[in-house]
Structures are given as structure tokens and as C-alpha cells.
Length: 247
Picture 1 (spheres, helix red, strand yellow):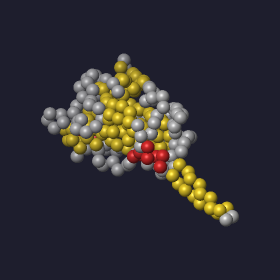
Picture 2 (picture 1 turned 180 degrees about the vertical axis):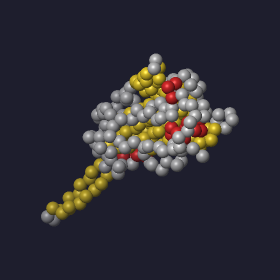
Picture 3 (picture 1 turned 90 degrees about the vertical axis):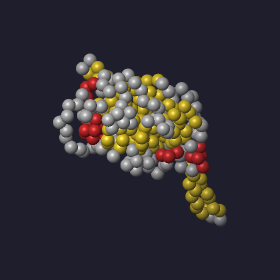
Picture 4 (picture 1 turned 45 degrees about the vertical axis):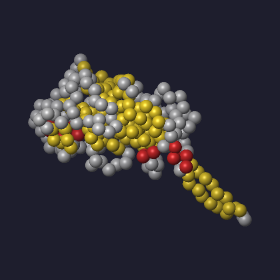
């Protein structure tokens, strides 16, 4: 992951895109343990080589993974908010995020959002609060959150309507704020120096980097319930009109 130091504690925003068919293709890199889903094997026909996913930030293509000319094409920027010269804590920035079906087959789409803090060397700081990284998720926009995930660092969203070729989802997020409350997060230690008590105040978030990752992936609408279970390990129901709901 690339990093950029600012005049305030630096940040990293990495947006990642993956496309899936029967198998899950992940564009997430780095030394992080991968979550593996185990499910039954289905004999349905899957058209993974027609899947294509493009992630959009403020209507600009950020990352994509498309199958074209018998090969996977992966590209885009790995950084967001580059237009902001100085990031300010407590300030709200436009961050409209949505997904386009850039493949050649209708798809159901899922996004996985991860928020966490790291030190200057990229080591995750698990004692710092990911909720201070406030990506505002839209409401009543056709996205449903998977409440079965209890990890405070991760949010998984499913678009309940199949996305046709070339079409886009509604935005699943529209703004980003890093809570200014981090300025008040301090730790104090005391020690005696002769007849004096020395109090040392350390800012808990001093030098920390905040990280935001978004991974988008798609599954074909043909035999959708089986395809989603095989690719994402999630049981869903698909109504006659194509509306997806979580079991």
C-alpha cells in the first residue's frame, strides 16, 4: 500500500476491486490473512469469464477488473482523495462510492469495507478505534448490510437488485469524516522525580495512519442463489422479480 504524509497524521485510502464468478478473485494485497469460504459444490454452469466490475468515486473510475479479449484487465488508481491538499480531522468530504457492471453479463454486487489504523511502518494498531473513521453509508438506497459480521473493522453490503450490463448501483456511501475526537484521545503517565511529580501526556493517535479499503465483486444472476453461496459463502434468497435478500 502506498502512503502519503500530510501536515496532520498521514492517511492511506486504498480502494480495491475484484470480480468473481464461481471463484472469488481478490485484488487485496499485503500481508493480511485471507478469509476462505467453504460451501457445497454445485454443478450449475457459471460464466465467470464475463464478469466485470468498476468502482466509482464521485463518478470517477477508480479501479476495475474486467475480462476482455480472453484476459483479465485490472487497472485504476490505488489512491483516493488525492485532490485534497490537506486533510482536516472533523471535516466532512464528499465520498460518493458506487459500482458499475463493466462486464458482459448481468450481476449481483457486493462490497466489503474495511477501516483500521496503522503505524508508520504499516503495522495494524488494534487498540485504536475504527469507528472514528466515519464512512457514511447511504440509507434506503438498495444496499443491505450483512449483520452477521460482528467485526468492527469490516462492513459487508449487498446490492439487492441485479445490475444489468453497463448499469451502475446507487451509491453505498456519500461522505467521509475522520472524527476530531482523536485529538482528545490521550494517555497520561506519572512518575516521581524527587519531590516533584512528572506527568507525561501522550496522544494515542499521534503518527497513526487511517486506512480505508473497499473491495467490490460481482456474481452472475444465472443460478444466483447457488452462485452466491459458492462464491461468497452466503445463503440468500432471490425472488421472482430478482430481488435479493439475506437468509
